[in-house]
Image (tube, rainbow, N blue to C red; front, side, top):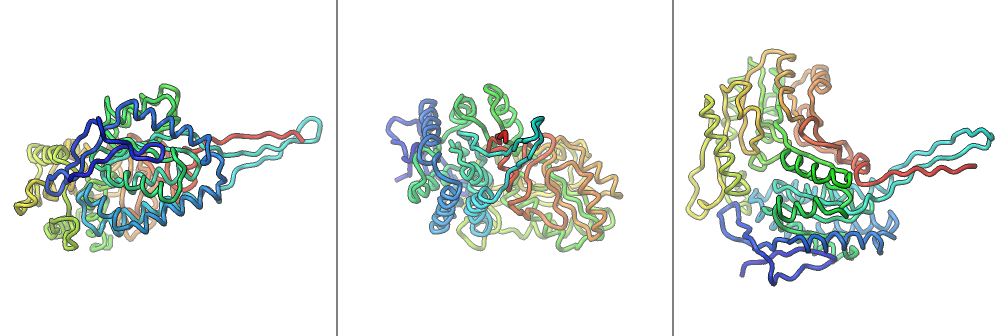
Length: 487
């Protein structure tokens, strides 16, 4: 019997009777693996009201140390049910098990512990000031939770990116209404079971499922009692959410699109650079906001680099996520597959040379219903080609030679996005110079996706608003108040 996933509100899963259901299909083979209950506006309202009531209840009365201990318990229960979370995330995304077991699920659990510890240890300011009577005054700052946070989640790394927001939101004492992507609802529901098991007070963590415009997502972002909204996803959706948040002057935190550049100099550790660019372009089937879709290679090694990257791409192994031999998964949905294949055709129409890929792999009969595309490399496109300028969010990259540092900096910056870049060189003085000149929020030198969770994370230009990570998350999830005491 197909499982039905319903909203999790005020500590309980809601009844499915009378709910409007939609199918969740496996991206691996197209089978229906669950039916999801779309939350109507009245159900979203109940979730928001439950979250607001929890602010005034046991959760709101907890000390920082008590909240931190509870979040550590959440992380421990996730670890105890590690295999369940891996299975759910593989079912949702179709990505290989090694990605889930080594990155996405461990990082998701760690997000609760990291931010619990940050909040326990972060200081606030105090100032002694002079007054005309000579007795002085003391000013000190306190942090208070912002309130009910609307958490709008993406589908590409659903558990990791959801907990990246939940960790600091809950550590700071807020309550949340989570709207997972309609493509990836399973781990958000599973986390509801964990919250109930460890005794997180009712109403602190709420989940409502559905779509975006004129559906659950819009109901969350326009609800007047949602105090702030955090969103990871495409820039167009972020723009719509920002317009909704303008009613009531509510805060937003956005991590949006990217058309990230990878830069490889001739003096780079060649094998490390090939491996790094391969990961940054093709991990998670290219469905990574930090992924590299523009690759600039210094001319003396361009052809050698192209051929080495081609060989790695052609060695990927398609297959089911639970098959440990599989190294490459499907795209998230048929709709997204059509979008990516449309860009594959557009690249050819714009004059690209297809180095490898460019179509659909020949899959066995039991997988033909899945959302498979070939990892793809192009060369030969002009700098103004749409495939070079627009975010595709698929397993593809365009390679272009360059001749000087100034030239490649200009090329990297010539885009409306500014999320991340990766630079490969053994000339560290040059690497530091370039890191200052490239207009992005995150620069990796001789690495990619190496994350210290205490550091600021976010994008420039149309890649986002605000910063997450460590104490930087607290600026969004708390209100800082000043207390002035006359002595």
